[in-house]
Image (tube, rainbow, N blue to C red; front, side):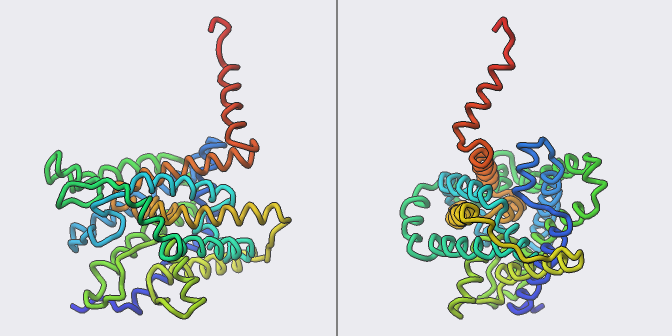
Length: 369
């Protein structure tokens, strides 16, 4: 049976991106907003929605492995050598930049679709720095320094936790790890009554999770094996954003690519949702201070996203669907970076935030102490 052609895969990427942009804009689902709600406000509802997305993505990816023999080793997220230190540093930089901008790369695409011109500037700077680190003037520095320090895994294994568990516990562990993690995430997410009563949030979470699965399916086992231009990938918004801007600016590169087309789809989907809700409006920077903050954040996200191996969607959901070894490291780094950024915005500096925590801790001690 002949697989999907490159054009078909690109159009599916456009459709998946459209669905994600449309539902996320309607639900106001944002990764940075979810982290901020949890860390600052103690509200975990939106973060649990991403947990639901991840659970569906894991179940779908494992089903592709079981039914179609999907080879995880063909993806970029589970290499035999993993630069964990570089991943952590890049993730912290990405999280810090995300806080300065107020959203991640995916969120910037959604905002652009609603008429936010600040996001256009952010994405341009983001793409320049991402491409510079990925293939440009900083690529050599990345390869010779950051990626030179890497953890080598046992021969014959991929950088996925199920493979490593199979070495220690036996082959059955490879098939149980994913479903167990997914069931745990589903239980935590669906126990939240507020989340269950938020149909738009649930819809966006389901669409994101299934979007990851569709990406793996159409670029992997369902793709034409002789179409060399089809790269195995799924939803992520670092390298595809950089490649999209490069292709538009130079006419080189491939636009009909799942990742690149999903970028355009997200913008179009968010625009459609904004127009339907009569929420589309042009916005620009309020002052030079806000512009400087966005430019700095965009640069940090662009460089950090490449070092981390993906954005909050690329690492948080797409790498997470494979239970990649880099996944929890990247997610933790992004959360740490985001918290540092929030401290800078609210307290003036991370040191002031730490001093405030110390004073709060001292005030909670009893007189006897």
